[in-house]
Length: 329
Image (tube, rainbow, N blue to C red; front, top):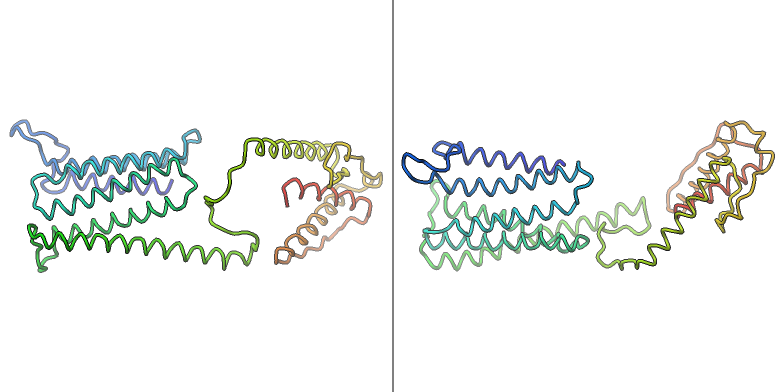
C-alpha cells in the first residue's frame, strides 16, 4: 500500500506541475477563441502521469481488497509503460536529429520494460525476470537524466550540436554504458543480499536459507497435492478431536491413527488444572529446547510448579510429540 500511495502522490505532483506552471494549459485543452490546441506536449505528459496514477491506485486496492488478483498490478504496470512508450514515440515530430535519436532510445527502453513487466504475469516465480525489469527501470531513469543534460545543458556549459552525426554515434555508445552501469548496480545488490542471507541469517537458522523465489523447484503433481492435503486434514482432525476430549489424551506419535487414541491414566484426572497446564508447558519447552539446541541455539526454562506425576507427563509428552509431527517439526 505504501508503494501505491507514493506513486499516486508523485503522479499528482507531476500532473499539477504540468498543468499549472506559468504558461501552462491550466486544464484547457482547446482554445476556441484562437482556434488551436493548447500546450499539447504538457497534455502528453499529463496522460503518462495519469496512467501511472492508475497503477498507484491499483496497488492500493490490491493491498486492501482481497478479491482483487495480486497480478493485476503487473498488468497495470505494463499498460502504463506501453502508454508511455506510445506517447514518447509521437513526441518527437519536427525535432532535430539528436533530439529524435535520444527519444527513440528512450522509447526502446520503455517498451522493453513494458514487455518484461507483461512477462511477469506468466513468470511470477522467476527472479531473473524481475532483475531484468529492475535494470531496465534504472536504465530508463539514468537515460532521462542524460536527455536532460543534452537538451537543456547547465548554464555556462557547452551546448550539444543537435545535427552532428558524431554526437549520435557517441550517444549510442553512451547508452550502452548506461545499461552496463544499471546491470552492475543490480548485480552488486543481488550479490550483497545473497551473501547477507547466507552468512548472517544462517547463524539463527542453519537449515536451508535461500531466496524467496526458487525457479528450479519442481512443481508438485496434482496427485501429490491431493495426497498431502488429505494426510494433513486427517492428522488435524485427529489431533483437534483428541484435544477437545481431554487435554492429556494419550496420542501415539508414530502411527497417528484413530486406534492409537486411548484414555489417559486415571491419575491425570486428580491433578489440578494449573498443575496439568504447568506440566504440559514444561514438556513443551523441553521439546522446544531439544529442537532449538539441534538448530544451534539454546533455551532454558524451569517451571515454578512442575507436575510431579510421571504417567501424566508421559501422556503430555505424547500429546506434544503429536503436535510437533502434525506441523512437520
